[in-house]
Length: 330
Ligand code: TRP
Image (cartoon, rainbow, N blue to C red; front, top):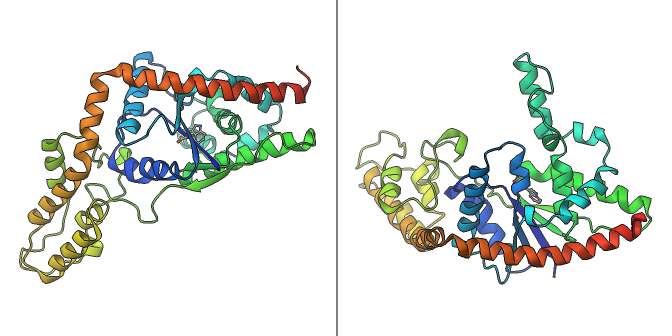
């Protein structure tokens, strides 16, 4: 069985764009792979120095994945900071990472550009954690003999860098020390629109949180921006935000029925929004209930993470022992 691994950055409560674009596809992949999914808390440290925030975000994002159906008995679910072997591998990999490779990382280049546009020193606000971010990510991946890395398109370059670093290591010791990972896209081919019709994104403030209470969910959906067509007019499902969201939560049959109602006319936007609320609420209610239950008992979350991390450390320790021998530090 192939090994699939991905890191989850602890950044606030996810929205339905994250659910459909990252969580659901990763959980689907876990059905056919040996999955290893972890909370990438050390990656969050580069930007966040508030310990309470790190703690609460870690708990919330772990609860979110568990509530969405991650089964810690099937998926190795752990916390990066509880697998210190990651950092030993990071140190090894740094010696195989050309600085020029890091200079080419998109995230770093974007910071340089933002600084130059603002007339600041090019490296203003860039810490070494950020600069070497792709190497830590390579350590996460290579430590666990990963075949597949389900990620958003913005992370492909990082996975390709992990391959470069692994190849250089393998080449120097003339041995397949590391398996070469392959990124796979989790994002939909069709982007999910937010409440204002633009791509759903935290930075646009147009998101629908996965676990929004029923009342808030309805209120948010009623805010979806539509055109000014009247009730009687036939409507185009293909250009409609409500319909785009609907098709992600409804059965094929329901989608077809709503499509016919759009085309026939006689249905106002308020009705379409109500239909959307119903299908979304049906899918999201059980997730919301599980999330609230988990957050009310945070020990179940930390226990799951600690148990998973203990298993992850065992695997990691074996890999590190093997690598220490290769590099002559046994
Ligand atoms: N950089 C990833 C992100 O921002 C998170 C991440 C950290 C990751 N380590 C990883 C993803 C290893 C895949 C594999 O989303």
